[in-house]
Length: 304
Ligand SMILES: Nc1nc2c(ncn2[C@@H]2O[C@H](COP(=O)(O)OP(=O)(O)OP(=O)(O)O)[C@@H](O)[C@H]2O)c(=O)[nH]1
Ligand SMILES: [Mg+2]
Image (tube, rainbow, N blue to C red; front, top):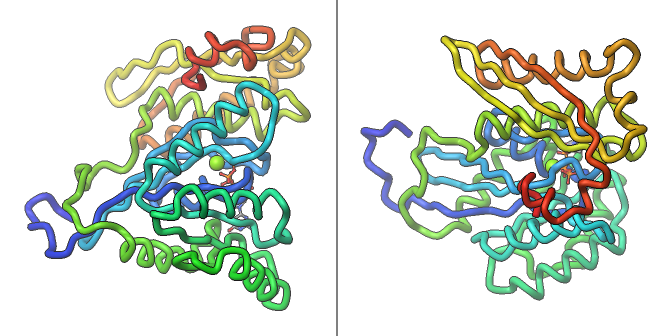
């Protein structure tokens, strides 16, 4: 939508919370709709830790997507905060989209979550997004769709799609459009995310930590951007990786710094592609024992 175009009659605008268990494909779907890697994606659960806005605008509608951390049960302070963020997004959104990984059978957590959302937010439209259909046969998919219909018969729509392959994603956006209130756009149509360069840099480094590190290490790392300066067409970024215990530091650094170097190269390449400019990235590693249980540290990291 160009700025000099008048707003179409009947233009719709509103927010949609992307909700679901960890790893169901919420961030992948957001990136696919926005057409840019604004949210990090990894095969590990609990990748997303904070809410991420992605704004989709066309001639007829503006959809403000809120990507959220996966809803799960955990006694850990950081994880409880993450789940609170997801429920907060559900409170504020005009429409709730509950995502499912259709390669897995319907489980108890999904049943509980679906019932909880239906009870708490019966006033709001609710869509079930049946993701990862590229990975499952029709014969397996059909009974799973039937089970979801039975679970939540009053839902407004059930949309099978593949976020990764972009199958039926347009149909999802079109379905959403019809459920949003008639109102003019809230955000400038040129705008597509609320994520700053600093946040994206921290997230891209964290993505590489999730992809490179095993066991509990990635879950106990955080990334703090110390400085972010533009010079000419390049951006110079310095960031510190916080590790949760002394023994994790040499593992993140690797033999002769090889692991850290790999993380830095991959994150820099991704950022360059996203930002369309040269990025210089310097990484440091610091031990901050059990930072993920400390309220002050969590608040400082925006995870409080
Ligand atoms: N085959 C297939 N894989 C998918 C699809 N969508 C997502 N994935 C994969 O599922 C994994 C998790 O995707 P994410 O987008 O990070 O999932 P999420 O729901 O945001 O996860 P959290 O942030 O941990 O809550 C990644 O390996 C994705 O590539 C899909 O449509 N098909
Ligand atoms: Mg995510």
